[in-house]
Image 1 (cartoon, helix red, strand yellow):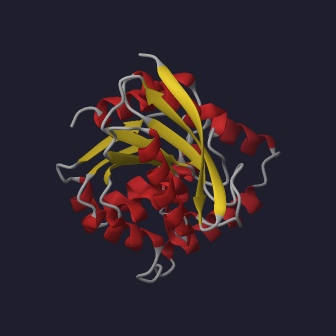
Image 2 (image 1 turned 135 degrees about the horizontal axis):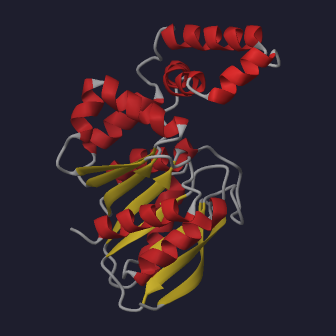
Length: 276
């Protein structure tokens, strides 16, 4: 299917924001808005967001990617992913105006873009779905536990690690200090109730739409999310709901940088968005 790409300019809080809409010739009632994680702009790492939007449009799904305030070409002061609700609302307005016939939007985000999308979605009736890639649920002790479980365990099984150790070129004392420091952080008291994972859980629990979660097997951010989901009963219950679909791409890195990984994410997204 052919597609039409349009540059968009729209205002948010007195600042001009810029984006690109990839629109199929036949239109579509459900579109995908890419929520950029920072610090990035609307093309994404290795043009990930550009290629995703074009793939979706060729499959008949309108797609839009944009720079929120303080990022890329957009005006305004830099801000964190927790302070872009107004930007998302303005982008959805512009997207719906640019895509006649579109009535609902799926928010698609990577890393802290996924977290921003998750926390915004319940407040906007136009958002019917979420695609969350390697969602950012970072806490100090969560990262420490994930690093111990995934990074250090993997290192102990690598031949290169033992080869360097036996050759005398390995800083064993320094590595032990680092590992012990990580272990202490993992055992430290948890974060207070206002921590990011709790706020995300509350938001997702109140969201009435559909959710797809995609994690990369070789990514600590994705692993931290999976560990949290497995360890906390409330998260486990949420992610087992019929409205939630989960995929894990073994071996993939944080941004799904290889072409086959990127294509798989695109295919999962397109099939899911068009399935309901």
